[in-house]
Image (cartoon, rainbow, N blue to C red; front, side, top):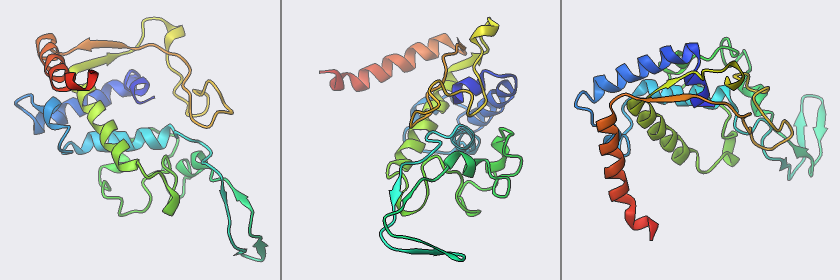
Length: 212
């Protein structure tokens, strides 16, 4: 869905800003290689966070069962009660996120360290949140750095191929555990075909031992 959004009208602006920020930090064109070992492009980090917030990966988180009675206001929730966290609702809570229906990379630029509380609920929350969140964040950051530095992502040529950018309506299986995007198309236009071929060749050489 992040790729889908980059293909939109607003996404064109985001692509341009992201590419400019990447080139500021990597003017020698080595972002493809260095993004694996470092995370220096704050705008792309913020973009990844907004993708995770806007398109909640697991709209209704995995169930949890309470192990003791819980007092909540004037009621007692008994032990053994099954709870579900509505991650989508949390990610669109206007008390926590200003203008939640708007896709805004800027909302995270001044708060990359998360000092203002939970940045989003894509990984759940609390002690039982996704244990692989840090790895996932780094993988997404690396993927989008490489995509943006290598390609310009265009809108599809046919209206019927446009992605649905509503976080709920985009789901092809509404009752599925995870968001399963409806099919769409985008265009990938190489920024520099020679550089792209070199990067791919180098990557294949470094990973060929994994194919045995």
